Image 1 (cartoon, helix red, strand yellow):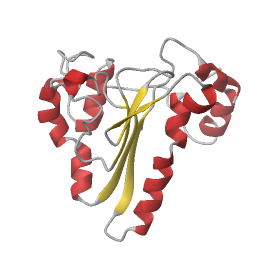
Image 2 (tube, one colour):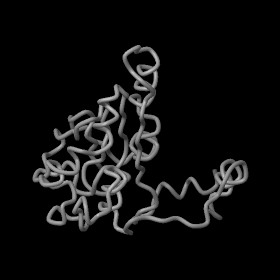
Image 3 (spheres, rainbow, N blue to C red):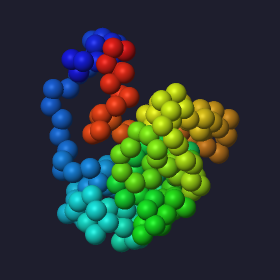
Length: 188
C-alpha cells in the first residue's frame, strides 16, 4: 500500500491492516467460486480460469452455482446485489451469454468475460450494457461503485417490510495488466 498514501492514511491507520492473507487457491475463478459456495476447489470442481476448467460452465451453473450463498440469502428474504467481476468466463456465448443471471441475485451488474477497465460489456440484470474508453464515464471500478443500482437496492431494502438487510457482494477488478487509469488512484 506504499503508493496509495491517502488510502493507507484513511483506512490502514484508522483501522486494521493485514500482513498475511490466505486463499484456497491463487487462481481467480477457483478462488471466486470458493467465495460464492464456501467450498474448496476439489468440491466445487472449478480447476482453472477456462470454460473446460469449469469456470462458469454449464456444469458449474447446474451444480455449485445452483447452491451458492445468494440462493440461501434470497430464501431468507434478503435483498441481494452483485457488482463487479463474477467469473472469468461469465457471459460468453457458451456459458449462457449475458442473459444468464445466476439464481439468488435481485440486482445483477457483472462484467462479461475477464478483467477489463475499458471497452467492456456489463450484464445489468441480464441485459448487455456496452462501455467505451472514457475515464469519466466508463472506468469499470468507478462505474461499479457509482452505479445507480447500488443506491437503489439499499434504499429499496430499507423501505420494504418483507425484506431484510441488503446483502451486497462486489468483486472489483483491481490492478490487472494492462495497468492504466487505476494509477491515478495512487495520490488519493
